[in-house]
Amino acid sequence: MKQPEDDFIITVTAEFVKVEHPERETETLFWNDLEAILLINTDSGPWLPDIWLTLAGNDSGCIIPHGTKGFEQVYDIVSKYKGFDFENVTRSMTSTDNAEFLLWTKP
Image (cartoon, rainbow, N blue to C red):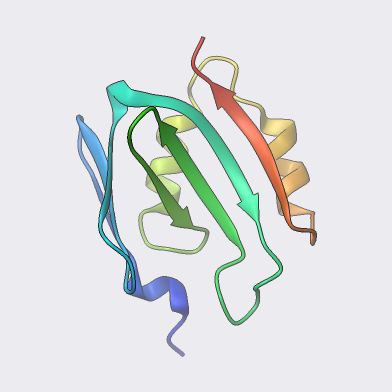
């Protein structure tokens, strides 16, 4: 059965991550511009994505729904950043509330 996450296309290079959304403009974040990483939970599941990996820069950013092909690749990259908060990952994955979980900020 097709899931809503299947409509997202994630491209990862050494320079950037790009997210093509089915209903929004394409988002691109250059790794050098990354300022913060969050997981944002919503109460939209299970019919819509409800956990979003959010990469925020000063003038750009992108959001990647959990379950999208490419999510794990991006997560594997960012989870290696010094100071990455794995406890907040666990909090996010066990939360059913609308909430934001800060995972990392640029030193």
